[in-house]
Structure formats: C-alpha cells, structure tokens
Picture 1 (tube, helix red, strand yellow):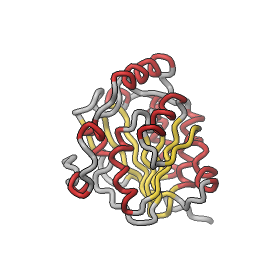
Picture 2 (picture 1 turned 45 degrees about the horizontal axis):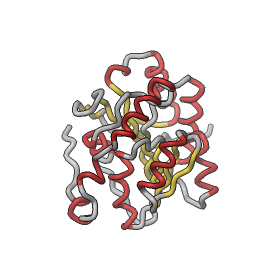
Picture 3 (picture 1 turned 120 degrees about the vertical axis):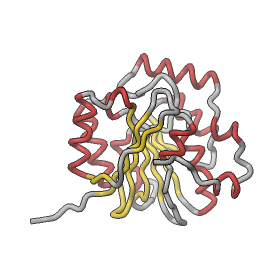
Length: 223
C-alpha cells in the first residue's frame, strides 16, 4: 500500500516549512535516546519517528470542523506537526505526554495546541475536563509492545470509551517487536475493543522500520 500523503497541507498552509514539520533538534534527539535507555517501557525506539511514518499515520484520514483528535505520546512532535494544519479547519486537538521535558518542549513548539501532562489512561476524564466530545481520531505513538499487560488493557479500554462510534484509532509497532509476547497480547486485547479497518501498512523509511495499524470501534451487543 502506498504511503503517499496528500499535498493539501503543504499547499493550503505555506507557513509550514520543511524544517518546522520534519526536524528534531539535536538536544531533543539526545533526550529521546536517554529516555529509551532509562524507560524502555515508555519509549519504544532510540530515535524519533520519521516524516514517512507520520505520513502513513495520517494516510486517508479526513477530518472536519468540530472533530476532536487525541494524540498519545507526541514526544518530539513528528505527528503533531502534521496534525497542526487541521486546527485552521476547526479541528480540536489534545496531546497527552508523560515526559516532563518533552511536555514543555511541545508547549513551546506548538503554543496553539492543547497538551496535558499525564497518562493516556486518563483520556476519557480529560475529554470531559476540557469539555470535548468523543474523539474522531486517536493516534498513538506509545510503545504498546513494551508495556505491561495491565497497562495495555488500561489504555485500550480507555481508548474505546473515548473514541466516537465512527472514530479511528491508529497506532504503530516496530517490525522487530512484532513477534514479542507483549505484542501478541496487545493484539489480543485490542480485538476485545476494536476491529481492524484495513491491512497493516509497512513503513521501511523509519528507524526502526514500522508497521501502522488502524482500528475502528467494535460494536458491543447487550444480550
């Protein structure tokens, strides 16, 4: 599947230059690496996500005025930068970041966007706190394959409650971690709340190479 990204953003929003969208400062990269070695359960890679992965994460996503986007673990902001243009179209954004320093960096780099310093498990209460409806899109940069089963369960259950009936939950994993027991557990738990929307998309131009997964909300029937 192609990961060609619409030129609409670059055409409609000329204030977004390549450096703004794609770059990470050396200081951010070093901090990202230090977090990986200190907290591998919270950071899945030694290097921030590439623009190619960012494009794949937003492939075929159509947002309209009033829609809410929630981003888990924005990190250095590679996906955030590509989501920012939608604010001009009336889309509302909430990013949830646990790392103190990255949270402060995000606030400085994207002052027009809303960030919360906390956990993705809080997403439902945060939407209520900020007076936002259920999200049309939840996009995750969290390393589910490195998380404990309990944390996976907590975040996925919260995500199901926070996602609108026709919403999209999109996340990714690294190819080398796809066969790990915790990755298999993630797939099992995800199947309780969501259904796959399409085939997984592989992004080789990322360090490490990644696989993007898209889910829709599973209809829960009461018997």
